[in-house]
Image (cartoon, rainbow, N blue to C red; front, side):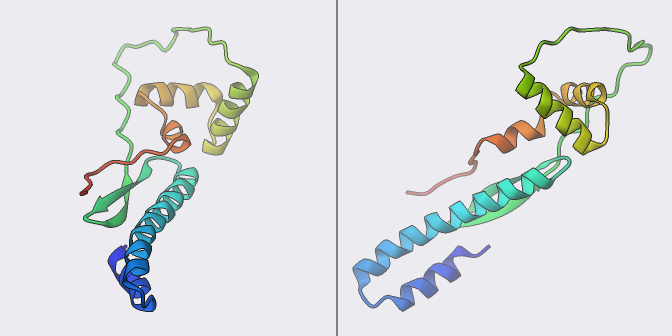
Length: 135
């Protein structure tokens, strides 16, 4: 995504240099926010992995990041360990929905999520900005 092309076009449309400089900064912020919104929408649709917004200079890039493969269950593990987990009803409903969306049982979904070490869905809930900036 080349933000500089769009920002330059906006600058050409404004005759006043002070207004153009102000709009240039605002346009970069708007484009970055638009990229973040696009990443959030894509993350909500991805069954695995996530999309991050990264800055290359002043241009935002959408980058797909695959989830790390869960470590295989060690040989000889009898899968008979049990745990009691108490969840608020609202979270239980979300877990059931996420499992249904993935086409697996709640138990299978929980085992996969714990084996991964974290949930890709939890990243979609908040905004994370990574990269370097220039002032």
